[in-house]
Each structure stands twice: as structure tokens, then as C-alpha cells.
Length: 114
Image 1 (cartoon, helix red, strand yellow):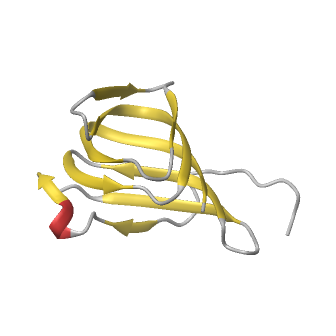
Image 2 (image 1 turned 180 degrees about the vertical axis):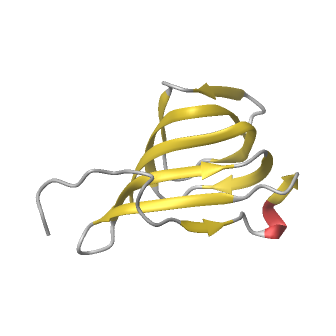
């Protein structure tokens, strides 16, 4: 494995969607470019994109993200809404639960640690 790897949307992506039992609004679709994974599978980095819709989220992992384009909102269990736009960076820690709502198709760069 090389010591430098560029993460790009030109790489092959994996299409997907949130599990049906978690969708609360719309018909969101996702694309994931999981460009980097540690040898032990505990760290991942790449790009993720989702179309408008909303779904329940529950994190067991730690994730750092930067929104590259679009607008999303993350609502926590207390009902607080965090609006996210291009240039915003944030961390979600294990134990977080809420709703991810995509207002405009959103693309983010991410690093996940299990």
C-alpha cells in the first residue's frame, strides 16, 4: 500500500440507500467512495453523497466529516437541528442518535474510526 492516496469521486462508487425501516421522509439514495481502509478494517476514509430525504441515524463509530456541497441537517435526540453547508466540518461520536435530513444533494468527505 502506498503512503499517499488521493480521494476522488473519479474512483468507482457503491450505490445504496438507508434501510427502509429508518427512512422517515422521501426516497434518499447514496453513493459511497470508500477510498481508504486500514489493514485491520477499523479506519475508513472517502466520500459520501446523498439525495434529498431523511432517515434515522445511530452511531457506534466516531466520524469526522467536512461537507463539500449541498445542504443537510442533523437533528439530535433533544430536537436540536444542526444545519450543515459546504465548508462545515463536524464530529459525530459513538452513541449519537438522531435524524439526518438532506435538503439539497449533499456530498461529504469522511474519516471513520470504529
